[in-house]
Image (spheres, rainbow, N blue to C red):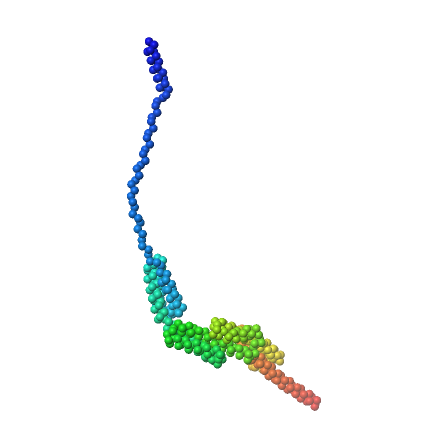
Length: 353
């Protein structure tokens, strides 16, 4: 082999060797996928805005509530129950739909206002008449107890108030008439109770019972005067005062009668024992039995807490046993006299022998 050819072959061997060491060629990387195209934008229509509903009927509800209270305060349910029930039904419709269906609520309250207004117009004369009758009944009670004579400084103002109320009723000022008649019922009630208190007071003084309960007596006297001082100025205060005066006077009477009954019971038992000491139950048997029956009746009344009746019965029984003793004593004394005379006669006869 010639020298140039050998050099060529050697070069080929070197190149082949270098290629085998380098390895196979790496594949080229795959291209990245392209991002998807954006979806076309479709414009949405704007949401429809609904028109606002009617506002809550607050003013109508307040007016209906005011009229409803007035009808109730006047007591119109008792005078016109059907009309009252219809107005209440309308008010219920307004209340039930309030805040849910304001149009229906407004209609219900409007109907209620109309019905309550008609109810009040129709019922006012009836309410005035009713209060006049109540005032008249209490006035009659006060008159029957002679309040005009017993309290000449108080009665005229009550009478004037009554007459003024009657004038207002005649003039169709029913609200004024009702207010006046209500006032009169209190005034005439106080007057007749003052009459009752005065009667109790006089009875206690006449029977000298105050000494048995001086504390309640003093309190009763103070309240009795306070009721008169507050008359027309503070009718509730005047009425409370006379009610307490009556209570205190009754306590005085109750206490005194209880003590009296106990005192008469003791007197009865003392007289009974005295009568028995001389065998009165034998000497005057019928009288003794009658006195004993009174005593037993007194015990029965005392057990029933009727101290007044018990005291009266014990007093009668005490007197009866005292009479039994006197009668039996006379019989016993007469018998002793007879025996003494007989003894004397026997002695005389024995001496004559």
